[in-house]
Structures are given as structure tokens and as C-alpha cells.
Length: 115
Image (cartoon, rainbow, N blue to C red; front, side, top):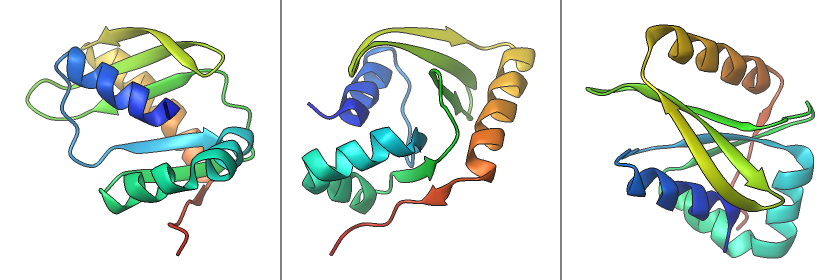
């Protein structure tokens, strides 16, 4: 199963609904997903998901969800398998996560659907 679909399902399980999620992926992960599951990547992009590809080292997954119940999360992996998720709703943790995401996205290029 695609790593991004695993994360999306995990977010649903913990009650986080995201209309248009954005992911910043390392070059290695983005390229691997393209080679192995280009159809799934195109499907995600067509559904409104935004993917970014960065040359920076991305040591862990982090996300922010804004809305009535804003929160941030850090995902834990064992290889490509998501094994856990830490959620936090404090303003400080959300600010910290947004700063990390902005830093990775600043030098990233947007992934486009292959046609």
C-alpha cells in the first residue's frame, strides 16, 4: 500500500479530516513512489492532494491541520510502514510544525501528475 494512503487512513482513524492535504517528500521517496506506484501518485494528485519534492533530508513526517480543532502531528515509521502518530493541539507545537514544513517546502518543487 502506498505510504501516503497509509498516512491518510491513519489520520481518518484518529478523526483528522483533511480536504486537500499537502505532503513534502524527500527526492528519494517521491522518485520511488513515481517509479513503483505512478498510478497511485496521479490518483492522489487528481483528488486534490499536493505533493512537494525536496532535496533536503526529511528525518520524519510532520503535518499541521487547521480548522475548528487545529493540531499538528509527527508520524513514526519503520521503513515505509507508518507505525505510530503523535498529535498535539498546543499553539506552540503547531507553530513549530508549520516552521519545519515551511523550511522544507521553501526549496521544494511541486510534483505534477504524469499524463
